[in-house]
Image 1: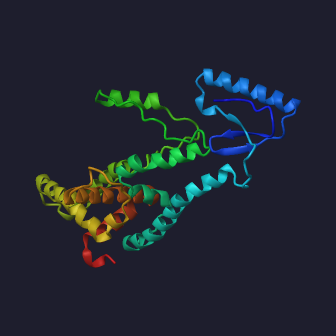
Image 2: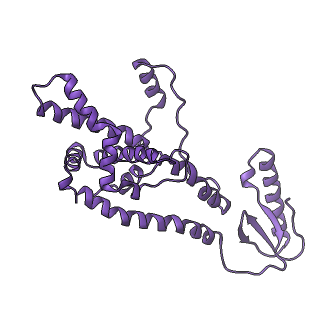
Length: 284
């Protein structure tokens, strides 16, 4: 519903933001006519997000509030959440006896997948409606590879490529990838220590020992010592209904935490943290 006002002052409205224009003179009318034709052309071509509405400003009152005021107000809850979260995680870092250099790795390790799926869209939509027309979104993941084997892996790597300046640490907003990495780190730490601790044991025996160390029940116990469920960021989900679900999520969170420490400082810190966690008397 675009129209041009011929009498009185006029304003151009982008979503909920108001941009003031001068009184309708001949030059102003010509500019508005050009704007109208341009917007009409874009609407025909499918660029619906660029449509503006021209209405009469007669009878309106100037409040002095601009579009960015609403945007800042919507960002405040998120900012407050970040401040409270990182202030609270200082206690977790004290229990770990380790301080993260990159706090975003810690936040990612403590974020359950349910949160990124359920909670990011409302804020993004609100910001879009307040003038942020094209918010930056995560790039879609490459299509799933159905074939297995080394050839499929190489072909996928060639198709993805790597642009100059592009980071290789892609964080999707939850801890599944860090859990994948932490699981491998944990397997390596346990395998190495068991190999040196029990030189006379058979492979089957030390494999059973390693399985006991890395199973979810044991990892959940270690996570409870750190009270990870108190720090885990999650949303109401069918994946978090029973006690077993929370226990599994805590174990995954612990693995993701080790993966984050590995990326932040390397393997020695992971070995030190896991070694301290295995012995309860050394946990603060």
